[in-house]
Length: 344
Image 1 (spheres, rainbow, N blue to C red):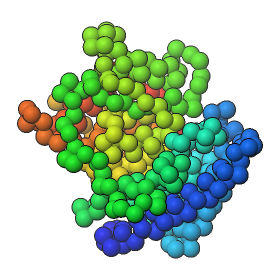
Image 2: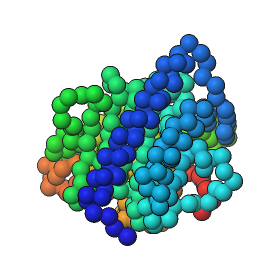
Image 3: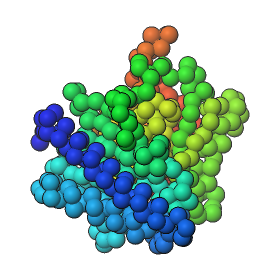
Image 4: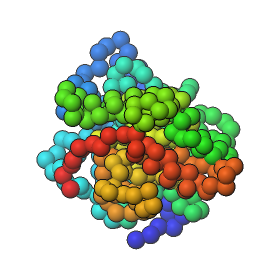
């Protein structure tokens, strides 16, 4: 199934307005709660939280979509988490994938890295992405894209009178650092898995962060000497900043499709790539790297994501894809394999 660019534009504009409406709802609720402790419920553990406003925002979005597009499927974090069916639910038909609040812990602490993420897939490919950060900027910041040859990617501050900014923010995007990951800005999250054991995913993430930060030659040759490591508490915002060219690498494990669908559409439209953060078994230096954005539900949405920003030809004449794939291999060599699973 395919949709025309005019149909995708209609979906984009609808989702953009809906995200701002949801953001207005969220800002109002947060303002009313500033003098109170926001009531929360634990899902997996004390860092995996849901509030009544998460559920309220998802209902607002879902009701609006079902009214406007009654034949479209809907996958939302809170309704999925509350249900008993945990298999992979994405089909090839028109499907909305929504995280009403990515960064609930941030919102509770009034840290502004909170996002409303509204993604739209067709043929299991992230095709329209809208991410609204309601507490970033004076009245919120909107990132959006139509992942299509005639589409585009944009950023705008809510209430701004000027035109939207095209993404990436630098045009053309600069080449990747020559000795990347040295010189890169690296985004990664600690995640919800907090088990204390040598082989836990938390311990592996800690090892990865140290490897990436360590001087070249350190850690048995795994030192990456990145410029810095950022953990924003929102995988959505991590990937959006990489899409915008404000970071180079996003490395994540334990995410779900609602965490990345909208941001992935934005990243792909800007020229970035997404692969599995676990390297394929027995891949050689000469083997092609499977791209998550080539299609296939398991490959587009799993729980492991390594995203690299867009770039332009470097001084050695290397193409953007050559640079991106070289950086993917360099990150794989410096990071641990994860053991996340989900029902398929």
